[in-house]
Image 1 (tube, rainbow, N blue to C red):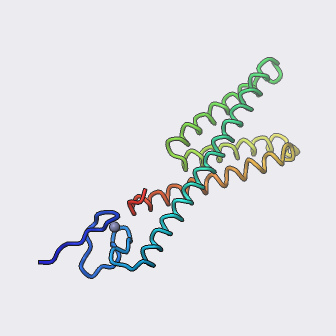
Image 2: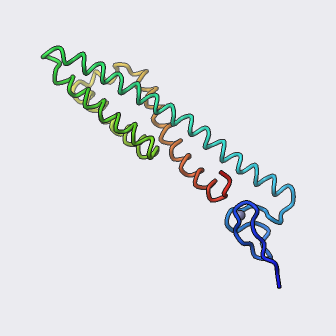
Length: 171
Ligand SMILES: [Zn+2]
């Protein structure tokens, strides 16, 4: 009777002719080069996940800033009856971004996407009211835009590579 071979990484069963584990790809019967390649691939994926975590943290910091700005501006506007309505608008925006921030902690990809879409809509609504405002704080808007786009990409990578690592049982 043949002895069954168990993958040392994920404990899946290997067929006798298998060099690589059919589940996680570990070269159970591979040579040193193949084993090194496997560990290198795991390391690459881990590096991507770590980098994605950093960029997702940047989005969170950005959201704290946006929430703070909207809350301060909103409270300030409330004191003047001419800007009262704007003040309410800013406070609602601060609340919505706070909701997005909570969502980012639970589901980074969806939360960041929601915050990004809402932020774009806000920018568009401002431009709709007064097209000249597109140039107001354009550098800051560019930086925000870049952080959001990197954040969405990173949240996607984070999800994808974490799932791959889990499949490889290498977390
Ligand atoms: Zn395996």
